[in-house]
Length: 419
Ligand code: UD1
View 1 (cartoon, helix red, strand yellow):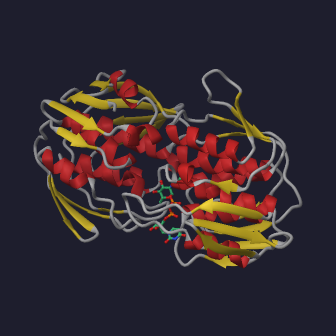
View 2 (view 1 turned 30 degrees about the vertical axis):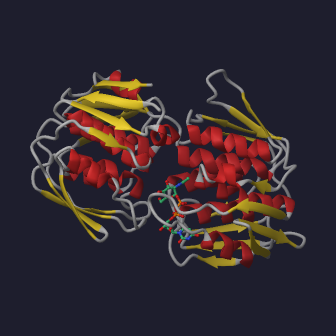
View 3 (view 1 turned 90 degrees about the vertical axis):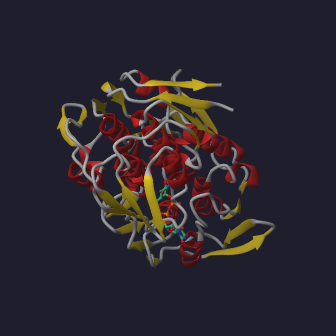
């Protein structure tokens, strides 16, 4: 199994190109099921999760073809021939649940393995199911699979989410695009990835009002058609490399990154002493002086993202003073804490909050990556640590970060992948 070895202490300097957003690409690929025509996606990141979604769509009978040698442009088309999403694929990637809405809207039936819990929490899908039920679907649970059926066509409904869910908003938005009549999604998630999905659906012929707000109003249409769509840059990859520049005390230009997608991340990083400036074609991130502790609480967009929490904590572990990091989205998302503490960080967890007392320097150590974002937080810690850090279980990293070691090495980091 691959590992990543880092020798810390070198300030980063140079340019990193931010790729297409994984969490936008996955629902956009599922949206390819909403028409038999071709959906052409560009700026597709090259990640293990994209390969898993490709496999899933192919299992449903669709043709997913790369249009360029580097695989960054994909054509999806051909229609649904099989309505089962098997356990073997879903267990690898929870985002597989995003095929449920499209399958019910197009084929009137779906048999989708229920995603289990994951290392960051229980993560149920009840909001997806309740919303689709309101639109006329019926569900049975059978052998770990949810069996969904619709008599005729899904119909519009007024759905008020009790709390914000990115995945449920995406599933219901796709279902509503082809439902009969009007659907209102209130208290909908506002993440930029949802705006990206909605604008692609509009290009496919969907009628959606309120894009970018927490109230989406969808007038269902009979069918959708071919479209081309360019995926937005990954705001979490952006934030992660901003933390890399900051923790190393360097200066990095993040090509393609967009300030307007970063929400609270920019404010918090600036509060901690990181300079972030919008320039032509990207963001310049610099840290010249010391880092100061800053408190954060994870929240739905535009609040501070849970997907940035582990990386920010690594940064705060070497800041001056104390920080309080509170996780409100997932109940078990502090598994990076014991690993950071093995490197000399001083972090205590109390329920949903962690108190981070900054230390002047971390020490390299062998550590274990427990999930995707935790993996990156350990790499960040390795960049700042004295001596050698080896991050094990990097398959988590490959799900969501493309060529991390190459991007960081190109900016002067001493980092390599060991097979
Ligand atoms: C998406 C992102 C993930 C990010 C998360 C929160 C993708 C592929 N994944 O995940 O990277 O960490 O948003 O920004 O885009 N919940 C329920 N019932 C449901 C659905 C969700 O209780 O039916 C709960 C979850 O357990 C969690 C909270 O709602 O506590 C938010 O989850 P949600 O926004 O749905 O996350 P995902 O869409 O799974």
